[in-house]
Length: 258
Image 1 (cartoon, rainbow, N blue to C red):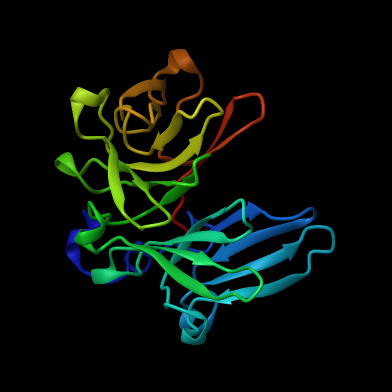
Image 2 (image 1 turned 90 degrees about the vertical axis):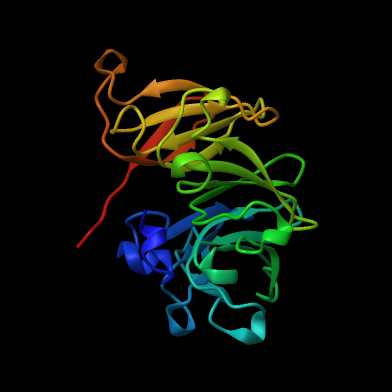
């Protein structure tokens, strides 16, 4: 797929606009504050993490991913999660060895960054080709979704130990022994039971599907087939999701703006 054409950072290949997909992501901070990651802001358009006061709309720069004085450089920060300690975990789908992506930790007081896991470093576990989403588990480990690796390039769900940076494979979306296969899983959300909801933009067939993954076994079940009119309005390339307090799921769609 696109990752095999060149080792140029993936975001540049896709030509996504800021709001197209995962170029802008946010996580709740303190009351009236939200952290926002921007793929193209910062020095050299290497990305930046901002803090936004949601009452006034005022913004402040937390970390410039193009500023080496603040730690390892980023390239395309695309998603984030707030840890219980108040630090922010940021995935970057073009940083790391051979543009394989990376997971950073950012100190929100100083903006300083540290590298948690280099997704292109095989010594830390299975390689991740293009991290497109993350979710923080109650244990402090991080789940990362990638639409491209593993069996037949159908994508996979990984777990990252945020202390060691080591990675393990949770679910191979091309392995039918683990349940219905996917084609391009792009987004994820954790349910209160600890299971993982994963949106796949091309499964279904071809127009998208929502899966549930057992985070312990990696086994999958099909929740909603976006090609099945019997389940409601048809979908087309769903790429992101959010879980409501009631347990229902909101879905966003993949857009490439020219």
